[in-house]
Image: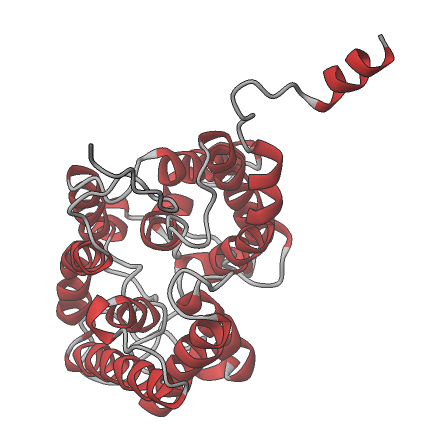
Length: 316
C-alpha cells in the first residue's frame, strides 16, 4: 500500500509559469512598443531599451545584496521596465527614467519581498513619483512624427484648460496625438488586449468594466465619450496595469468593485481635479484598497454559516 503524501497548497499545478505569463505580456506589448517608435522616433526606442536594462540590473543587484535567489529570469523586471517607459513622454531625460526604474524595482517591489509581495503596481508608483518630482519634463509632450523637439498639448490637457477640442477619432485611434509612449495608439493596445485574452493571461472583467464605467460617467458628465476612452492612459492602464495579478482582487465580485472604483476615480479626477489625467492615481488607490475588497468579497467556506446566522443559532 502506497504512502499518503501530505503537503501544503497548491495541490493543482499547470504548465503555466511566471516566466511564460510575463513573456505573453511582453508579446502583447510589442504592437504598442512598435507604434511608439513609429510615432515618436528613435528616442522612444532608446527609452525602452534603457528602462528595461536598468530594471533588470536593479533586480539582479538587489537580489544579490539581499542574498536571495535571483529572479531576473522570470521576466517580471523586463515587464516593469517596459511599462514604466510606456508611461513617460519621449522627451524625458533618460536619467530621470532610470531613477524611476530604481524606485519601481528596488523600493516598491524588492523591499516588500519581490514579485507577488508588492501592494501597488511598481511602474505606476514610479510614474507618480516622477510626475511629482519632475512635473515639467513629465508634462512635456512632443508632437507625433516631429523631427524637432516641438511639443503639443494632449487632448485631455486642452479639455482640462476648458478650451474647445475638436476630435478626429481616426487620428486618436491610430495615435496621432501627444502623450506617453505607450498610451497613444489605441489600435496597438487593443491588439495586445486580444492576445492576452486568447492566451488566457487575463480575463475581460476588469478592463471592460473599468472602461465601461469611465465611458458611462463621461456621458453623464457631458464629456466626449470616445475622446475620454481613446485619450490618456485609460486603455493602457485598464489592459496592462489594472489587471496585475498581485495588486488586483482574485474574486469575481472583488474585480467588479475594483474596476468600478478605478473607472469612477479616473473620471472624477479628469472632471474635477487639477490634473487632466487620473488613471495612475486611480489604479494605485484601488491597489491599496484591494485587501479590504477581497476581505469583503471572500467566498464563504463550505459548511460555514454567516456571522449573522451564527448569532441567531447561538441565541436559540
